[in-house]
Image (cartoon, rainbow, N blue to C red; front, side):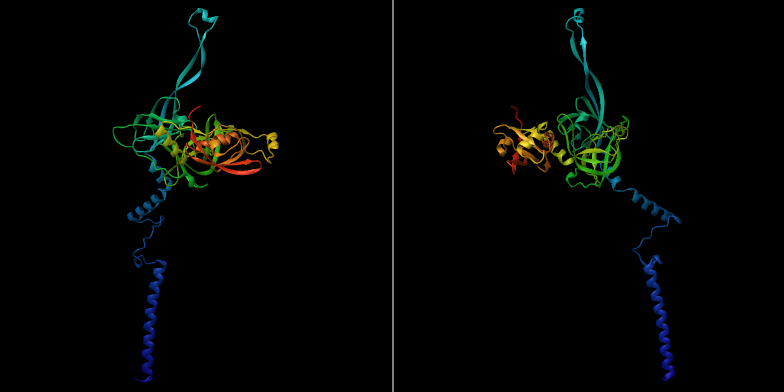
Length: 406
């Protein structure tokens, strides 16, 4: 072959190479930018909502929208909807006393004072703890009940019986029986791992309609943790969960859920500190942590009551003159005023005039802190106690006992 023939052959090979290279490059570009739906069998395009031209595309779009609607909150509510009940209570309420005249002369001498009562209806919420029909609620929902009925979301109404009550922590356990079989119970979570700001869901029966026992759902976040209140004698709300999920009358006793649908608290009350809050209480709801409630339930089911703890310690708040006399730089803490011999405080090594500054993980500033602390503890628990004695800080171990009466 002469020189000109070789050049022609090389030129032909170059042209063929350029054509093949262009075809291959175009295919690569189409695959990268997904211009060809056949180029990637594993890729499924979402239909353009503005250009739905087929029934299959419309169905795909509807499925995608449905998946966005069925979020964690919806799934959590669906998980417990069969387990949240409404509780209707008939209570006997004392309304005062009146004079009772047995005869004419009582009008002038010694008429009898007779107490007057009336029956009232109260309502609240609760949730099923096990398949045998144990229900947890607030004590203030069922306290003083003459009769109580449990309304289920499926329309059943069953008479309930109180298993045990704990006014101290405002919790109560109720039981129901049904010949139809077992009940659908909730899953209990861990309130110790809650985070401020995480989503929570409150479920209950506010402003109950007797013909519709299906629970309602409100959503918010954990606003704060470890809130403490003492609203009345021997009632202590300690380490409460604060939420902005709306809690209304009738929600008391219902569950507070995390995003997994696990119960992490029992909705108990709304803060009503101002006139404005009374008109619009949403934003400051409080729930009892479920980890404490688990232990209370064990006490009520096992013993029919909550066993009272006993320390044998009498304390007194520290005023300014007492702080000066003891050489204390501040008035925080309580002073041990008296100890019962051979009782837990004495056994732990406490002494009169010791200043208790903390117990467990909690700082003690007053006798209310000291008394309210024990809502979290039970007979047999060991509580670390930090005291100041003669200017020295000492840590002791206090083992609680059951109160036996004196």
